[in-house]
Image 1 (tube, rainbow, N blue to C red):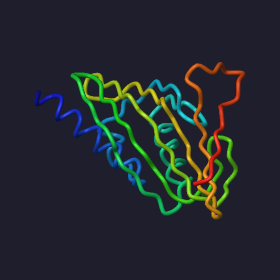
Image 2: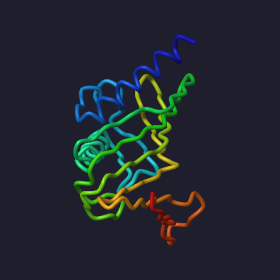
Image 3: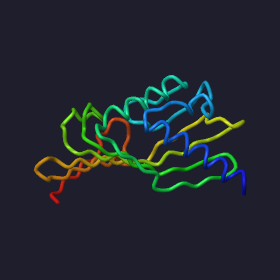
Length: 158
């Protein structure tokens, strides 16, 4: 039980550090080579690219706020549901910068071996944009969509 709690605390500290723009935890908890799947924009393959992804994510959201909504841990895996939001400052997931309020949420499954994260899966991604006029748009990639299909886009006014 203690191992689960310790691993969960380490990964939570790592993710909070990454989303705050600090990379103090990258050397402590990230393997030199890492396998990633499902990341928006690109799948990192090493520590420098992983850090680059989080730098990019931090840059997209001006005035960003983030939260870890759920965290589950086992002996070698940690599942986190996180959310980051702010004003859309740079192109993200194919959407040019709009200045609108943007919220991105996703699950990330971290696999830890020998005390280091060496695999990450990002899935159940969603992107919600609220325009300055109050229109709300949601981009929810279909889990079953093949690589040649475009994601489904839903629109509704709130």
